[in-house]
Image 1 (cartoon, rainbow, N blue to C red):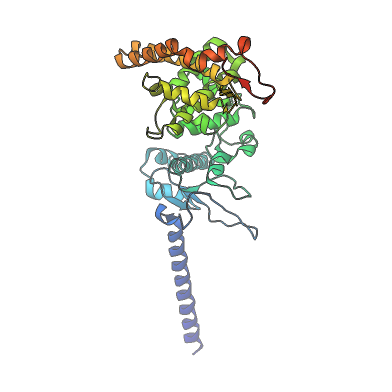
Image 2 (cartoon, rainbow, N blue to C red):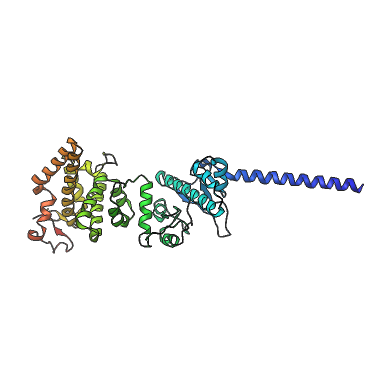
Length: 384
């Protein structure tokens, strides 16, 4: 009798163990892969992945696969081996005998997949940023994009204020002369290159001395996306050198703000209109109007135009003439008769109609213009 009782007890224990193992395996397979369609929830816009709470750490952080773009929970190396074992880079890692070297290689593939996912999120404006360390406060969409930058070595995204600290001890750091001062600049250029903001044809010294030090905002984005502004900045860099880096970047940003103002005033034109498309005889009046708006016009009882920031018009006048010369030179080099004629038309209008517009009057400011101190000490007379 006791023998049968023991046998029945053993069968019950074995059955319970089998059920537990099967349930554990099913839950682990369910957590292995999570499709992109199921990770968004009801929130819109960019959010930052969170792997911890005030009550304790949650081990639910998702990572993106660089091959299938799926979001994987916890074990990325296992997914790469099972689903993408035939890929060259994965097979190469599996052939390593050194365990640490293999783990480091899988970590690099994981970080690269997360970076590609973050680039897609920033381009589309929807999804979830995968970051190395989450922020402690809620941020708007634009703040999240501006707050995080990828490490130049591992491509993991960190807050800009913490990026230098991570870069000092990054396991993928190479033996270069990068300091905490320029690590943010290198990270910005990494993002701009990944987000189809092509600056590949720019000289490397010009990129390091000028572009990497520019403020990250909408104006700089316009600079990076406009070929003529970049060529103008590169030409100034050859003339003035690194010692005038601030002046060069400001001239480029002025042209970008002029382009943004022109787009705002002329909303019937596409948002992708470039500076080269502005430098035509047809758009001359629109460029002058946008320049006047940038000079901040002020009403004056006598009817004479006053501007609170007249010097911007003088600087833009010089810059636009040089940009016209660059456009004409490109047209001659590429044998493009359209570019040559458009540049000639704009330059002709600048020369013959200069007395009716801003440039000449700004030239006359130092010698023959009157300062209206009784009306406002901060406003200067733009015209005589």
